Image 1: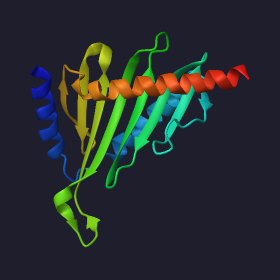
Image 2 (image 1 turned 30 degrees about the horizontal axis):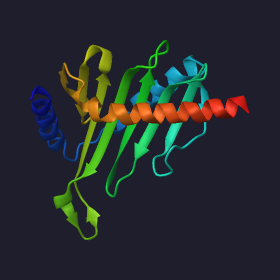
Image 3 (image 1 turned 45 degrees about the horizontal axis):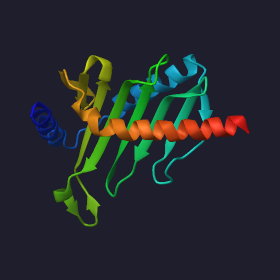
Length: 170
């Protein structure tokens, strides 16, 4: 029940992010992601598990340690930057950006309002920071937003590592 209440809260918060824009914060988070990759000398591996879900993969010692995936639904997008622990396979941090159209704003063949939110989840600490309009608006002790993401991410990690290691052994 506690997870349901938190997800309901996130839904209301997400609705409150109407027409905000997180481009500046997202740019900073992208630089942070690229810097982490560069600082660890991670090797890029070109592979798409699903042609409809663009992904970027970065490996250290045959293990996927940085992953970026993007979903492009009809109106808007969602993007995830996943940092895996350098010593284990666990998720250290995930940055989730969701930009969705306000379905009621459709007029003249275009959407005029969007909801733009960024969630930074630290699973080990069970902490989530929520941002909109380039500012942190909430921090709470939960990784509830990650629960539905986690299974997909680990399946994608397994498949990508399998392809990488198959290529490396040939």
